[in-house]
Amino acid sequence: MITPRIRRTLIAAVAAIVPVALLTLPAAAVVTLPAKHLDMDESTTKAVVGKIISVDVKDLAPGEPYSITLGGIGVASGNADSKGRVKTTVGVPTLLPLGKTHIEVVGSNPSRSDTDAFTVTKPGKLDVDLGHSSVKVGKTQKLKVEGLHPNVEVTIEGEDFTLSLHVADNSGKYSITFPVGTPTGTHSVKVTDSFDGRSSTKTFKVK
Image (cartoon, rainbow, N blue to C red):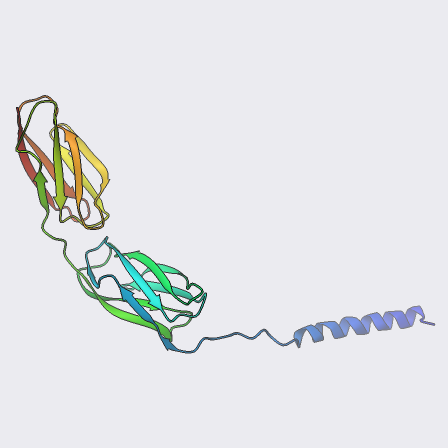
């Protein structure tokens, strides 16, 4: 027969043993992937800030986490697919200065990486072209621009209008068609790259 005293003794003994047993359970194993030189390719290794480029990474483990930096600035992160591959796009950070830098991918640990040289270049000459040297009253004029910073805002200013919140494409090009209004005479239109302030002005006549 278990008396109250024996019951209390057994409960105390179990309470003393359980914490010790929990503390001595084996820890879960942490798997560290071996060092490996990854294989990274980019669609270009020379670009102006703002441009979107493609990046292809191979030789990661399936599902392995990765991060990509350009000039030390993080531009992408995620996990490899079931084949250990990553296909993504990244933007050249606008904070980067002109000149040589590097693009790097790092896997689950620093010993699994690849680094390529990268050069931040100047944009081309800001080239503004008007579709017509003269336009009839009430008609439209077409404007084309090249040499802008890719994917950044461009401002178009006329004598009686301002167009903002318009963005150049990934090649630094932009085009728009706008009404010339009714006042006759010489009109001007100014294009400004919002990133570096470069601008160009063209004139045309309204008849």
